[in-house]
Image (cartoon, rainbow, N blue to C red; front, side, top):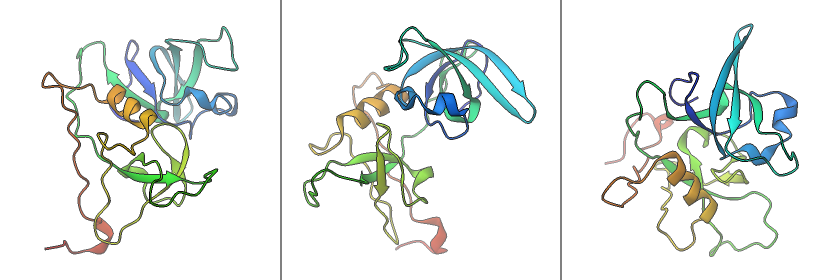
Length: 184
């Protein structure tokens, strides 16, 4: 979960890791925006009833989904109006099971730096990818590159609205914290 989820919050489904199996079966929910209608506590977990802006492919007419709050990215809250934009930090990942292997000219996908510790993870566009691992410094995702995935660029722009100057600023991830020393 990024941000504080409350009733009326504008959210984007970021992942479906903690949600119910029925919700996880609708993989097209990932990256889609919606509004929180109600919060439902279930023991130690909390679920949000999210009304999506549009229906999901394969589930015609269903616009409300029960999504675990840890699977949501908060864009705005009803009281604050707009959260302070946090720095964008994504690294590069390549398609896990490509139809055609193109090592040099492969499409680069955006992977949140918090998910780079896994061998396989979901990119911003919800495709299963392998993050590129570097022992010293993560390789930053460049949304302006010609080989960047258009779905990832769109997802980043949806999560982090472009400021007035029209430039999406990407914060390059820092050195690998597991190494213990920084690169000079």
